[in-house]
Image (cartoon, rainbow, N blue to C red):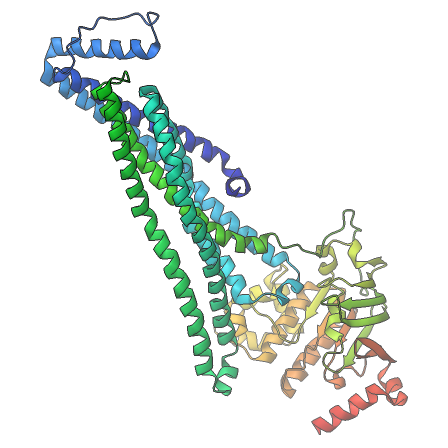
Length: 610
């Protein structure tokens, strides 16, 4: 299954490894077969007088052995026993050199496959993480996702991928050795076939338990990383509430459980080698007894030297059998990690492109139109957070959404770029439902500035040019000027090449927000979504950001989610949301005259600011 899924692109590496492994196996068998008759003749264990036979005079195997013996006796007669032994020893060295070179080439072919499979899994994981909708991560912990991407893929690399060479090599060696054993004595080999399934059953029983324990350990490691990530992210809260000891106790209990599981896994893993060695020794002893008994009784045609050769071959099969057993253990351990990786790889993405998408218009000079038709939405399929939303936003208009926290403002704007899909009703952009466009086309006409600006640990230039790979320095500088960011950027040590730090840690909130606005300016989107872009800023930063936003909002459709109502008094339409519904709509002055929810919000905010 694993090979079919991930190793298919490397089929020629597998073919090369198989061929070289067959060559290695042949040279190994040949080396053993080569030395036995030489020793028999040199030490006068065989006094037969050999004559050359034509290849058609009998079975190929018998003729080959006879002619080889004839060649050795002729060489002894010409140059003597000592010189013949030297020649044969040299030939053995050459055969062994060819064998180890073939063995090296078999591993050489597997290395690109092993590393390539791991790289492919990581790339598939990252691609899936990026492509999955935001909703997927509402049920997952970030630390556990990181554990799957790094820890579990690392476990696959250390176990399954590392075992690929053995998975190709060991079966070939076992099959080759068994073939030779059948040729030498089928009775002994049948007896061996009875022993091997018993040993395999014992090892398989232990292996099943190892896989189950490995899965528990990987899940616990994900929990540990999640706790660490949450602690670091919320360190101010932990310290403010004197919760250091509590978090330490939580973390220590999780690591203790992980240690217990790891101890169990390592003990079983350590048991694999001595168990396989012990079972192998038992098998050798039993075969030695059984083979010796049938030779003594004369029930087989194999002679004593042949039996020695048989035992050499049988003992040679023990090592690849043990390695194959270890591979089985290792793969079971890696399969537990692969199950966790598959939870990401096999996760279904409900945000899909249509089979026959509608092409987005090339130019939307005055902004795009947005229409909500009877929209209802629920995160869990039970409680609706948006109900019966009907709203038309014309090209070039600025629409503001206001209301208390939890009223559904951010959820509503998240439906436009299809971060979520509606449960009932439709969202239209430019005379078509959003589901008619490809996600890439739909989002290409939108710019989003969030309450929490997101900067990457890269240069300021690359942060502004994010999503606009062909942007020039002149365009980035112009965008920074429009966003009121140019002055503080050129004051940094390296200007636009200054690193922003982790999540933009080198800049204040207002500076980060202006860089993110510059990013939106550079994209020049027809539709702009501002999700509480100034709510977390101080007065001076808010003024600078608001000026940048007003420049950005010109000649485009803008949807503003507003916390500070003073920032949206000039909006073409203000929609007041409450409990997932639009309860009021109108201009600032119209809503004040209405003496409803909006006026109450204005009065409450004026009172709090006063």
